[in-house]
Length: 315
Image 1 (cartoon, rainbow, N blue to C red):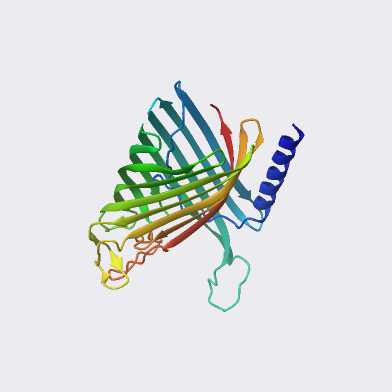
Image 2 (image 1 turned 135 degrees about the horizontal axis):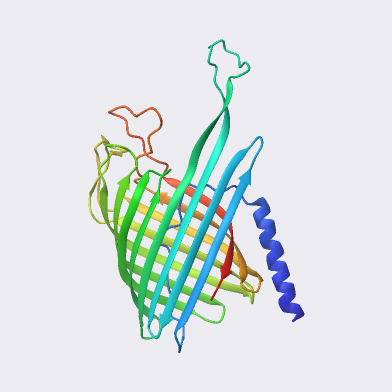
């Protein structure tokens, strides 16, 4: 009993230390609605699982920011069939003090300091997944997802996947899973006058979990989506306005790693870092002043996010 309590205390202290030194999250990237995977579990009766997640940051005074993250998941497994549904939402606003030399005298005078308030994150995602397990370490799966990420230029993203999942390694402490399949995504952009886009992609995924103690564990996941069809995009690095991205040029990579620990009964803390790369990103959202007719800038290719989340398991 003493060993179990000590291990939980050490894991909790380590996580709190990570949260204290973790860099501020870039909240302009949503949780990927296509990122989860499933592994076979021996369940004789019907099994339900449900979780709720929450995180938030609020600062006032000189630095004025507010960030909230909410999420939840529920799953049902009966025999060789499993259905899962999860959703997430991230929202952030910031107010930055700027100087406005209104009288153009090259000096800031009273009344020329003002705050510029903007929404820096508004991302949501929802996904449903069905797995049919067969033999010992295999499953066929199908998913459907919807989402949006305004700061990255995507007003709406929807689609689905179908594929094959294989457990590569499993023991009392470790699990390694690989998946291969097909992904379809429909994207609508926030930038006015930009056509929506349909993307057919090859999907590859690998996931790994390691149980450190009875109350803590590590996880690492990597996903690649690469387009199979040529895409008409608003702009490309090589052809300018109205260019084309050939097959396998619109490659999207997502990697996530972190640590999770139980701190009290059903309550856990998770600290993780996510990296997302899109080789052909969406057009950047318009500002108060519109872009010229010959200029459509793209959003950044790389997004990163470091987050600490409280997780409560109901079932």
